[in-house]
Amino acid sequence: MSRPAKAYIDLLALRHNCELANSLAPNSRTMAIVKANAYGHGVLPVAHALEPLVPAFGVTCLEEAVELREGGITKPVCLLEGTFSDDEIPLAAELGFWLSVVNKQQQQSILGASLKTPVTVWICVDSGMHRLGIAVDDIESTYRTLAASRNVASDIVIATHFACADALASDLTYRQLRQFKAGVASLANADTVPLSLDNSAGLLGWPETHADWNRPGIMLYGSSPFSVPHAEADRLHPVMTLCSAVIALRDVPVGDSVGYGARWSAQRPSRIATVAIGYGDGYPVHAPDGTPVLVNKQRCPMVGRVSMDMITVDVTDLPTVAVGDEVILWGKGLSVNEVAGCAGTISYELLTRMPRRVPRVYSD
Image (cartoon, rainbow, N blue to C red; front, side, top):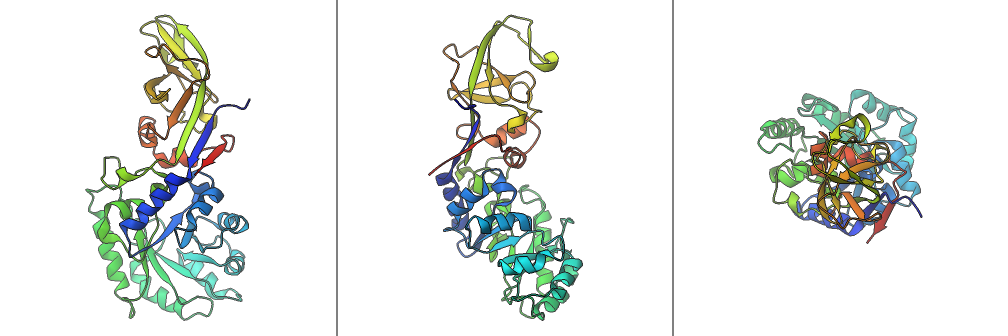
């Protein structure tokens, strides 16, 4: 019998979320972001499920893109950070990958490469996040130089990334939008150049920022990018449900402690369930006492410090709990955002840090 810790991946929910993304911006094209092993969900099953619904995929690096090609994905794949060395460019061109240009060095490398076929380029613009991208004032010269090169295909896209789209009351998104549009307006053919601005938060919460291409990531996996309820984000379905089972039960008298460091002590005669899940399975080590889990679909508090392979849960109020009963750590019935909030982190981290030792079980 195998260890009960498993991540159940609902591909029907994944497709639902992608169709929602498509419907929110029907005049845009969707680039599905599948970097970091599809946010921990397993890149090849996810990409194959989404390929009929999207015209392109986005990843971080050449290695992730090659994995998609070798796994049978034929749609275009964009390297969102571009290449990291000049020798990657010919292979990227040969395999039909799109290349982001995030700095002058990458631009010069593409211009100087020996290529048999031109590459599609996405010009990344720093409109205010100050992480990657060329300056707004350099849009016109960068576009003109790349468009004149035989190494660059004619379908250049200009993109930017919002820093605070998940904060719906922030005005930084509007300021970035204004700066970006002012820079693009310097192009002679500004009306025909395809643009890309939105991540998940932009797509869900800022309809005025929808452009030719949107780049949803976290929303595809059923997690809201917002910390508050949101009408559109609340329509998402969780894709990953992290499950395990009770492997031991014990009675703990008043005053006795549970777990490393004796962090939690029983304030009443308590029934404690040990669950086969821990930080070695991606469960957050900093989860505090009271972090909710579902035992037989009933909310119970996690108590005591998280171990590498186990957590302990107070099931005193569930007298029928038995060894082997199902435990849900997040997913259907318990939002990964809630668990992340308890642990002082974000859902992105919990999902993408899911280790390989937790089997993914896929269903349609």
